[in-house]
Length: 350
Ligand code: FAD
Ligand code: NAP
Image: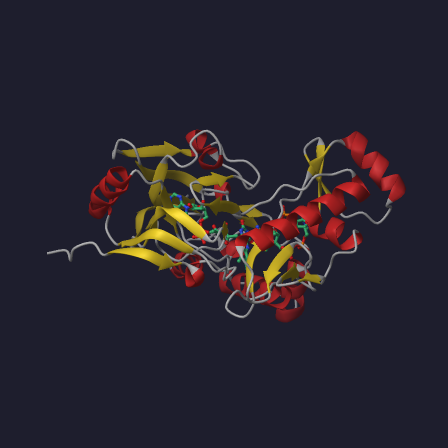
């Protein structure tokens, strides 16, 4: 028999968000089975409280008090659904740790996620912002997901079209915001390794390590982990939520103007547009490695905001406002925040 749900009141979230912000929730519960969700949703309905699904807390900024029921999604399980010449279809439950899941796919000779190694958080949160790194995005391998409708309690299936993936974006950040709890994700992987090494110096690093020999998937994963560990702060050492702003996409016309003024600007073509490296813009605005009170930008990557110890979500937000303002003054570009901000009853995107 399942043990009864344990709903905690006035629960500290400090160790439930990678920024390490001091915050608490009116109620908190950990869910280990989909069967527990109806009771959890019923509790929130009775209390007239919003439900906040939470995975690893690596893409959230919490205000000091959340008058909500925070539901830690701890659903576990992963399986190979189908394997043939052309593809390997795998499914994982939402609470699986993303990086452990990636390693599991590689040991099961299912390839494609190696460049997404070491992204913190859970499988269930991965579709929310279409996680991406080193030239690969979740959408490249996505088949479908299952999610419980918070209002009706029904499980619904979303295919790739229904999720409307964009750059660090999906329908769950827009039209269907706060309406679903994702319970599982199904992906299509490749039985043959097709290395994607064109991003940054990933290819050079691997070539130098293997003396030009073809890399295995684990070689690629290891190289990605090493680059990330070198450049990004470890949340267990210094609180952060990864990139705090999205890389802005701008028109060819604006790009031409900026290129004249800033010949060294870092930009990559995306269709008819250009994607600018937001970290470079922040650096050029004089804000790399700066600190204001308990909040600052990381010395090795200005795109990452860090909590030096005692910051609140409001401190982080106020600092990020100033970063946006300074970048806007210098380049005429308004950066968009990436993590989700929650405070009191009200929550907002970006
Ligand atoms: P959480 O922070 O717990 O939640 C994020 C949002 O998703 C919240 O709004 C939450 O309500 C919602 N949510 C979570 N789980 C569910 C669910 N099951 N159902 C419905 N809604 C849910 N991101 C990248 O894209 N690429 C990177 O390379 C990358 N690198 C990072 C490096 C560091 C050091 C850090 C700290 C973060 C990085 N991130 C990166 C951001 C983050 O890891 C991802 O966005 C990740 O997918 C968040 O997972 P999570 O479980 O921690 O989500
Ligand atoms: P980086 O390699 O220094 O690159 C800076 C930015 O330029 C990146 O954000 C990236 O955009 C873009 N870029 C670099 N090379 C590119 C290429 N060959 N083609 C297209 N775009 C290119 O960035 P980093 O901070 O070390 O991060 C490395 C990767 O991990 C990036 O993909 C980044 O998105 C991801 N990452 C994400 C987070 C997060 O929280 N979202 C945190 C850490 C790292 P893209 O972001 O579009 O790749």
